[in-house]
Image (cartoon, rainbow over all chains, first blue to last red; front, side):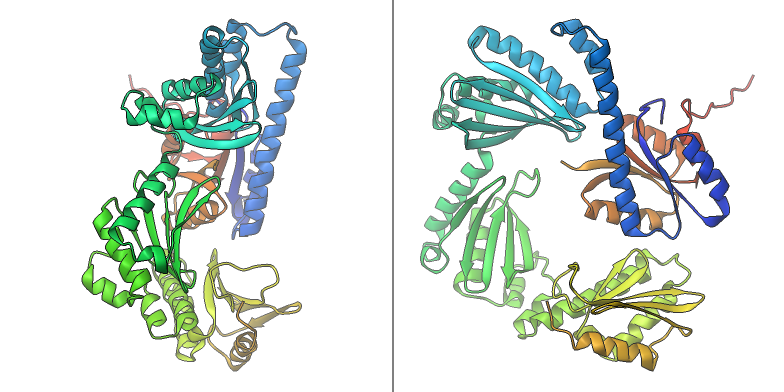
Length: 432
Length: 77
């Protein structure tokens, strides 16, 4: 791998029996070795530090190279040479775009300035002319992709994402030459300039969806008036009481996602361009306040969340807790089937569920460790109390975090009266 | 954008857990089960970070670190 990339940051995972070899790996340039069982926090912190050190090494070397080289403006040959040394694809894409933009704008708008800056994987070209700016961040997903931000007097006017360098350059040039984005859209509508189709595509698609919805289901204009949020990503929200439908483009999906939420919990999700279908679903969800099971019976293709029936029965929190135990049971049974203590953990979970703790506690996992809390939703914040349980040949190793951390070791891997008491203490904590 | 990492672990369950951890932390992961696969993935996707078991089939973590790490294929007369 070092033959491919001499700066790659390597973390080696080892067990106690191979420490000597692991130390040898450090001498060969590994950033660190970590002993199994792996601590998740330690692993992620080590990974972040390894990447940080890699960037520092690259930057330091580049700095030295610049100092050593002549200080005259870099010519094409020099740029090509620097490209060959680029540590990341993003830098290559940015430098290539920079070169092409310089060439293109020298004919069309000689007073425009084009810069190319970045470090690590964060590279962007910025074109400025008068009060207009267009910055183009370059990504590698898995080939070149350009994220454009059109600004006027430092105000962001529009955005766009394209994998075409040609379209990117056409839009940038039109923008700095004075076109308004609306003009670009109009040209687009005339079908003359398809290359602008990516500019503000999501925003324009959501506006079109909103207009279509209000025609197909005008009652929604009263019960759940659509609201368009525009930030880095655009979202269309329709809300009626505790129910929401959030329409957005997830990642790079060409079709919008319709996420149906009840008190912030997703009941189901649909990805479609079928306007008839989504207007019907929205009417049922937000206007009729239909029960998820009714919607499921009308649209059997919809995958309903297992938590939905609990919401219908008026037991939302209990349902969210019970579903977390279902998932964690499956995790230990299926995903960690190879683990020597898997069966013991599954049995312990069954004992705790029989005692009713699955209705009052959330179950989660961190690597092999079982985590129990009163957190309503997935994830733990710093201040939230929790109990973590590990199983080994020593028995149960339990850490309880209430005000302070306490540690217990129970020789038997089962729900003992002591463990039961500890879980009841957690049960008495508020849900947060 | 997501940081990229290549995870080289032969045990599929451990690989799945590690992937989950790195995915959750915002990394875009490529997985490899042995040395040969690791090199192919790495050549194609030049990730800045590699997390590897000390011993994986076909190659040790030490071999991955050597400058000329590609294990020479024996040629038969």
